[in-house]
Length: 334
Image (cartoon, rainbow, N blue to C red; front, side):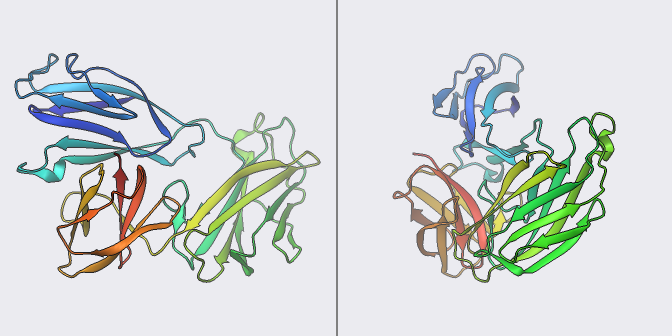
């Protein structure tokens, strides 16, 4: 549930646009109880007349909006909405007409999981090539008796990770030894760990192991790096973790619209067939547009204030990247 407060908003159009396909609109009350939104997919639009006075207050209206988040959304990632007040043209302060609101995904979770640093951006974990990857595998004994020993099997893909660069960093408990078959299969062995069960001693029922490994050099954009671990408590069947996912993109310097003078600004939000690009430089620079998988779908050159056609692109979230690596998210909705 999202509450949105509006102050002194006559004669404008207000749009709320979810920027993540994992978000679905469920319901929302009329603005101030008397201005009904137009609903197109998951986008809500209110046309607020010049004579409008909110029934709840002379200058304030409140919206209560209900959205659902898909169960596949990873915990602690953010889901975002773009809130746009239009028209922007002629506004004395257009910098505050577009606001991105983000909320973390919360919920119950499986305590046995793997995470990676860098996390990357988008659900595909977009990152640069030639980085060190740090993986941390978390485990918890959720049984009803202490675990005498724990083995963690983690099979790495040697085509995207440099197996010879593996470096053990640290662990919560004494690591007995690491077994490697030389082909990417690693086994971390915790003998005599005697890890308490969560029922009798929840705080001490957790553990983790962390290591670092390099990417293979110069991985191509769109290459995916996936990692899944199998955790064995005593003689039980393995607990399979989530899959940590990263996708290689070109050089990224992601920014968001903020106050001040950002190095890259793109209007409108959302866009349909045309965008206007404003950059700090007076030069003509190269750009590319990438989809959420890091695939380049459009290229060209641009100077500040120039208009660019994006009519060939389908609806969705894209990333507009300058040649220096600066990136701005764009949303296309036709």
